[in-house]
Image 1: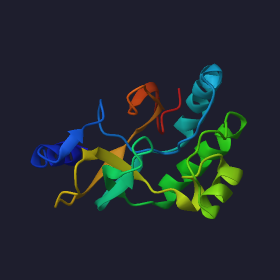
Image 2: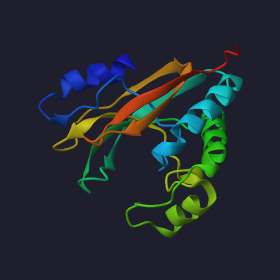
Image 3: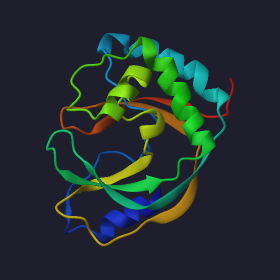
Image 4: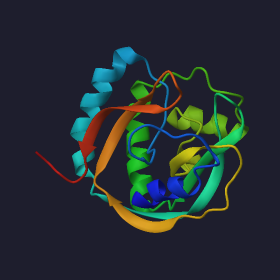
Length: 177
């Protein structure tokens, strides 16, 4: 993920804000009640060691829409959706079905509505677009990111009051205890 940090240094004049903490790749996003947090943490703790570390590859950059501002101002590094990554995504999506609360989504396309019905998230299943958030930017900078890395952990995070993510659980892949 060093390339993401290096990328930020080269576009500093375009950046409006940077997510706190180290860069991360989202496996699955959902809305859930804080009262279910402990159950979600336990479920992931038991399940994630069954998956092997993930070999990941960056495939350039893209702009995503920020939910709060409704502007295309989030610069991301696109990540190749391998069979292994998609398998972890679907496993987590299916495990979380008991905890999903389908409220508060912005206007959804018919495809997104289908994914909410099937997986509890408009960004799941065939609409899952793996990425690493680089920063919020004023305009799309002329920059590209490529490279590979191995991820040996899954992090459970929740959105904080600023709209960024805060980590609440870390799970090792491929390590049975």
